[in-house]
Structures are given as structure tokens and as C-alpha cells.
Image (tube, rainbow, N blue to C red; front, side, top):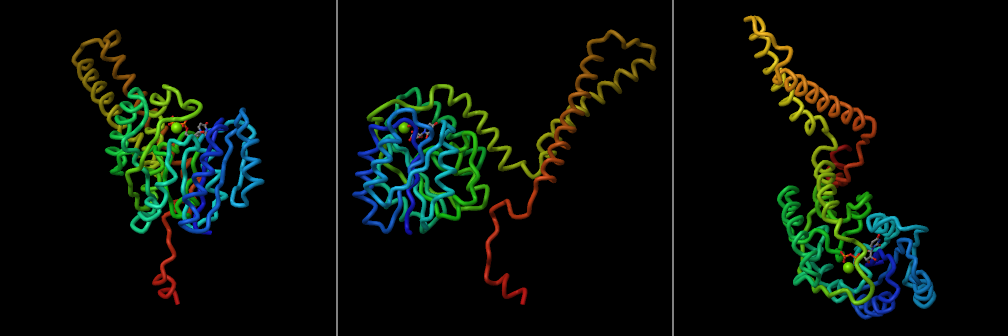
Length: 312
Ligand code: UDP
Ligand code: MG
């Protein structure tokens, strides 16, 4: 199997027949393929439409959640099933153009994940501006220099998706996660279309949540194996500041100045307690990490032939 197309969908009944038809025009020209529709607990007629497509086309596979679990969970389920050498993901709402798939796959010669860059992006300004800010911030903080982290249209080598464990809303930061595992990430400009049917499934609160998700991804990619490095530095700074303040008050006390009611005393105690809390949290994190750590979970290992010959 050459290509697996994974399509997460939630209440997209109107778009599905056209999407399937257009994929059928593009994919045969590239190689053998399967289309994996992951129905994320749709409450409209999407599943009925998928059953029809499944009956008509042997290359269609359908996976369905009993309830809405989110786009990350839907992608993860599709990734688990994908058998193709290359895996392409796209949204079901016809905003992503199937005609771009060949150029994404061609670019996989140079990298392991190719992310689409919606250019120009056909979404309202209220969505484009915050998204630009989050993309810029994410690129700066994670060191992945691409313009559009959260484009639905992406192409992967199969080993990349098998090493990804997505949950929550992490689909927004897939390139950062993949990059942190040591894979090479690239991008290609793709056409983007306005939504034709239905409405967006992510409201304005996505941007507030986006900040939390970014924090999680930063923590996961940088500090998951060394949480004390994350919590320890602010902890030490607070402890040191508190300690110095207490020492200053103690010297004053030795010289006969009463410290009981001074605001500075309250502040010093607060700083010391906070510092100890930060450091304890880091140590608890280290305990969790050491309990759950297994050597192979990084997904960064590769069998190299020279390693094998070396051992003989
Ligand atoms: N989607 C999903 N589960 C959800 C929300 C969205 O599978 O809980 C799918 C949705 O059907 C679409 C894709 O994810 O195929 C992108 O969603 P949407 O078009 O609403 O996002 P936007 O384009 O507004 O970013
Ligand atoms: Mg959309």
C-alpha cells in the first residue's frame, strides 16, 4: 500500500461525497491507496454517508467513535490503522484541496513530515490574526521554522505517525512534537478554500486553550525527562530571595530591631514556602518520570546496519 489518507470528521455529512469523489480523481495517479474516515461521534447523517461510501468503494475504511472525542483522538485512531508507506491527513470540510497531495508526497523525499501552509488562508480575520500570533510564538519557542503548525493537510512517512501519541488538543502542534522526536519537518504552500457547508467545530475559546496547549507541548518536548530543571530554577530563585531577606531581618534582630510585625517578614516566609513547593513539585515530577520511563519510548532509535555488524 502506497498511501493512507486519514480524515477526521465531526458532522460533515454534506461534504463527504464530494471529498470522496475528488480524492478518487487524484489518488489513483499516485499509487495504491486507502481512505480512512474517522467519524468523531457525529450526530448528523455522516455515518450513514460513510456506510454508503464504504459499500461502494473497497478502498474506503471507516472507524467510528461512539461520542465526540476530539480531532487529536480521531487522528490517533486513523494513524494506528494506517498501512500505507505514506500517510496523508486532511480535514473533511473541503477547505483542504486533494489536488495538493502529490506535491506534499513529492516533498517527503527531503523530510519525514511535510506540513501544508495555507496560503492565502480563506478564513475570517478574527481567526487569522490570533492564529498568526500563536504560530509565530510556537515557531520561536520550539525551534520549528514553519509558518502554519495547524494545517489539516499534512503528509508523513508511516514511521512518524506510528511514533506519535496524540491526546487532548495536541494536533495543533504536531510539527513541534515530530521535530522533538528527531524527525525532519518541512512545509509546502497549499491552496485553501472557504468552508462550503456547515460551520467550524472550534470556537473563539480555541485561542485561550491554544496558549495552554503550547505550554504543555513546550513542557513535553523539553522537560518531560527532567521536570526538576523546569521547576527547580524558579524554586531556587524564590528560596534564595526568601533566605536572603530572612538573613537581613535576622541581622537587624541581633542589632535589637523587632521583626514580628514587619511586612518584609511575611514576604520572606512566603518566598521560602513557594521555593520549597516549586522544588518539591519538580522532585515529584522526577519520581513520575523515573517510574514511567522506558528506554524505547523516545521514538528516536533507528536500526543502523553498522551497529549490527559492530556487535558480531
Ligand atoms: N473535527 C473532528 N472532531 C472535532 C472537531 C473537528 O474530527 O471534535 C474535524 C472536522 O470535522 C474537520 C476538521 O476536524 O474535518 C477540522 O475542523 P474545522 O474545519 O471545524 O476546523 P477549522 O477549519 O475551523 O480550524
Ligand atoms: Mg475547517
